[in-house]
Image (cartoon, rainbow, N blue to C red):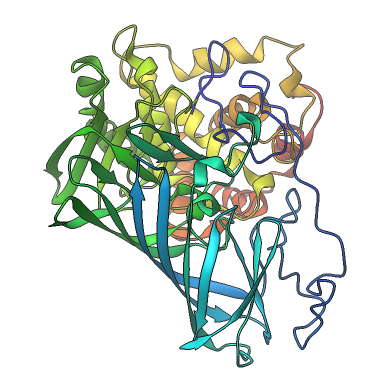
Length: 485
């Protein structure tokens, strides 16, 4: 996603669970409060789970209540039926996970929707709601290291679980469809989940929608099956995916299926968007991806594509894995492939290599912004150095006062993360030279593929390939509060 004119792309949170509207241009907000009480022990729920484990939070330093502790998910199987005529969503989610500590209960994130039953290892489980958390108590204790399966049946109207747009949960319902999209959270708006990128998983997503509409999601389309007035679209995500990257788009779309290098390519554009510029630009996806592959290493997934949504309430693009979401306004004034470069770069930086915590956001956004500059230069536009110089000249810009690698919870979508992050990479490139710089980038995507990574790990890798300490370089660029000299 981007913001103009200075910041090419700013990460939105579809309409923010950051408990306050992010201003798309300043991107400020406040995180939801951390849950009170001893870690891992909610009032009235004392049990055998170790007290040092926070079951209601995965341990993110900026957003303590995001995600859940005590287990790792290996896969989600989602079966979701959505009726745009009523806004009703009915779903069954099968969660396969492994306990990392002994568990007498565990948490799942789910916003607003009503749970009708939870079955754990074949037995009915007790479930209680603590705000946007489901507290599940299985019949039998789960040992540390034990794999377990939980099946959750639920339903409701996800677009009605927040009263104001500023508190929207990331699920947009229109008269003819819906869009589930948002960062840093949105998945919990439509299925029970461990909603933090640190717990990546595989997915199968079966979307049942009225037959006249499309049911779009991530990964490879395995097939469509029609039963009367309903059609089920079956999607398989075969590389681990962070939960916020999971998307569900329902509506009247013109869908194009092609192939590139033996991998399926699926483009979908809302029928409300006039045929023309959006179609022509989106069709250049694989061209841009091939250019980025030449710099960053092999494209990390088994499908390509993109979706242009027609809902004006969706305010910015997002790099949903294998199927980024774009907005028609991007192409109202003519061709623009810069946004493709940004969202496709995220397939490497953010999707394949995901953040360890939201404090590391520059590893996503700084890298994607730098990819924009590289593509612009490749296309005969501004050179990378010109992009850098243009931003560096502004001594008074607030980005110099906000540390890139520790911007605070209200700064993860700021120009310090995007612009200064990209500048950090270019300064590193000038310091170590092109050969070592692009070796760093390709090694990063190879060694961290399908996983999570931190700023400290990137610094360590850079020093390893550069063959010398780089503290004196990284400290002012990533953590300083003045413009590096």
